[in-house]
Amino acid sequence: MSSGALTHERDVREAYSAHAAELYGFAVRSLADPGLAEEAVQETFLRAWRAGERFDPQIGSLRTWLFAILRNVVIDLGRARSSRPSVAEGGIEPSVEPFDEALLSWQIEEAMRRIGEDHRRVLVETYYRGRPYAEVAAELGVPEGTVKSRVYYGLRALRVVLEEMGYED
Amino acid sequence: MKTERCREWREALGAYALGHLTDEERVSLEGHLEGCPACRAEAAALGSVASLLPHADPERFGPAPMPPPELGKRIAATIDAERRSKRRQRRLRLGFGLSGAAAAAAAAVLAIFILSSGDGSSPEQHVSFRSLPSGVKIAAALEPQAYGTEIHMYVKGIRSGTLCRVYMRGPGGRDVSAGTFRYRWGGDASAVLSAALDLSRAKALVVHAGDRTFVAPIGAGDTALRKQTQEEEST
Image: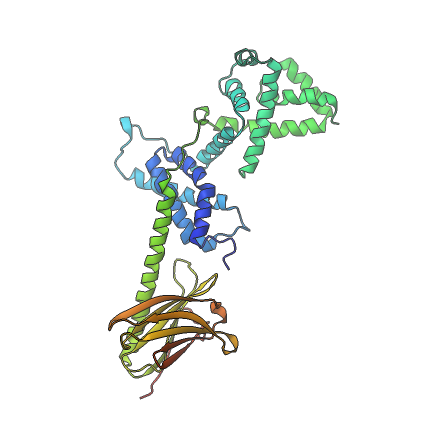
């Protein structure tokens, strides 16, 4: 009856150890507030537990399901926050990106964290900072061809990691 | 066709996907791609990854913040508290279910409640006992569990100190022990017991209280959604 469903406290504990870090990392990015992010993760697991019987692994992964719950929680928290007086420092409200865009960004950033340092470094220098390959090569003390091949293997690694994370293009 | 030459082209595919090749390099690479489906597929795959890069913020590639270690424990404690309070509510509901029966005093009452709780939790059955002596109430809420059935017993009005033994009667009249409890004082008492018998197979709940035995059928009202009460006047 409960095969795969999230009906027991033990299931929740397992789901927590597998996915809490990701959910929290994303919640911090999305809400720009660690305290609120904690609240969001806690609420996500509570809702998951209350609705545990509705989780069906045939339909989608537990990770996807939890992120879908977090999505609603973040939206609810955002609503609650916007009705509260602003407490942001310097009077700057943290930007509330649309959830899906924020999730996409976070997934790519998480994938970047998971690939090797060498690969990430050349992608940051050549792509994000727009520096010439020769300059990056000199700084790293490697031939220019090596920078080029690291860019190639870095993109490949990124693709593999994104696939592992369940990203579909 | 994958050749040794592809290797050299391949390593340029990353820079190509990011738009980092000079016009000259790009034109000659595209010449190769035209005749090489394998490299073309690779170029397309890298192109789709490259198209995602603008969505990321390189300032955020550092270590992600980790949840504080006590968060997991706090969630577990909250869930545990919520589960307990749900049980208390169920017992309370059971009590309300009985107050109607109390009005009938010596009347024999068979009441089977099947409550489908709004939160989507598993269906539980409420069972009460017929032909009880005046002033005595015995009822139970049965909840299906992976290991069998959880039984929340509710007893009132029997002599303090009475030992109660509870069984679930399975197919063929086989009784499965659900444990014992002692009725301690004159007020309400409840006990949580369990039996290794699937609720769907259970036919009756049997309570031996001192030298009396009470039997309540289980599952007779399976089709009832909310409440099905059948009363038999005996006096």
